Amino acid sequence: MQLPTDIAKELSRFDPECPIGSALTPPASWYTTQAFHDLERDTVFRNHWQFVGRLDQVELPGDYFTGVFMGWPYVVVRSNDGNLRAFFNVCSHHGTCVTKGEGNSDEFVCPYHGWAYSHSGDLKRAPHAGAIAALKTRNLHLKPIPVDTWGPFVALHFGSPTRKLKDQLQSLSSLFKRDPFVGMKFIRRVPYEIPCNWKVFVDNYLDGGYHVPFMHPDLSGHLDTGSYKTTLGDYYSMQACAGQTDERIGSHADYAWIYPNFMVDRYGPWLNTITAIPTSPDRCITVIDYYYDGAPEPDFLRSSMADSDQVQQEDIEICQMVQTGLNSGVYEQGVYAPKFEGSMLLFHQLLTFDFNNPQR
Picture (cartoon, rainbow, N blue to C red):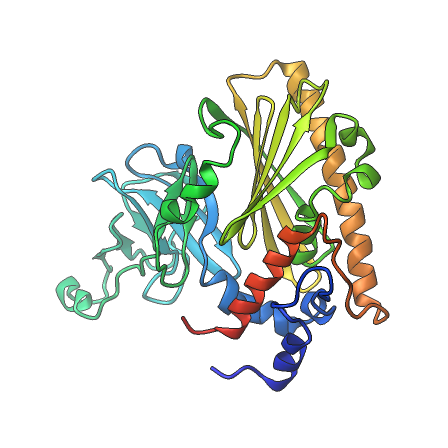
């Protein structure tokens, strides 16, 4: 597939081989145009694992949950044989979503005309539509989606994965100061709608703590920002920092990013994940799932959630301000702060590779 001339021209303005000290950041068009939003769907998000849920949502046979990512409706289910399966949540008859929400069921029955599917995706019944044997020969089953897990997380691949998720993240797991998942129990999910491109949010996350003293003064007081250390992998980065005098943060904080849009924060007794979901060129949703080692005391839970929300609100404010500048037509390209922003440069390099290799 040949890229349109206007997109190819904007891609050429970013040189992924340039050393960070002299490199220019991607141009504003990457963050503001529908053309890049559409390109990302088919090159970035179709070609990489997307974290969509938790194993505790599908513990028992028949447990399922649904969702939509970048226009792809999906259903994840624990089948009767104990295997985890995923399918496009699209009936083969007229395209209706066969189920919604989450729960437990013996089968999936399309609400439109009653076509029924097993948890293996097989068409079981099609009322008044003809002999089921004849229908099955036309491959009218639910279309499968590759599914994998890492720790307590469930991930889907909307394209054709070349390696398992666990293999991809094995070396990242070893970078956490302590096992990030042991003892962790899901506590709460909090979504935020943010008026910025999803990459603005990821850029902000990947600036190596550069913005923390300026945008998060309360948080900064509980971190030894001078100890920030960043480790780069093939498709991830780890930012680590020592904590000080705070029960929520503890003595150490790890901030892991997995390309393209999934983040795992491990600090004190807490673990939280952040998924940045694009909704338009200048808007995204961040979904934050909170886990705790055990059962938090109510007062500590309230104060911790309030502190976390304060950080999120501060990030939302600055991300909106960045998007306003990107949309202004005044800003074209920026530069990197070499001491801090190596992880951000890696992000942009990976995007460039995907943009230039739409078919893999």
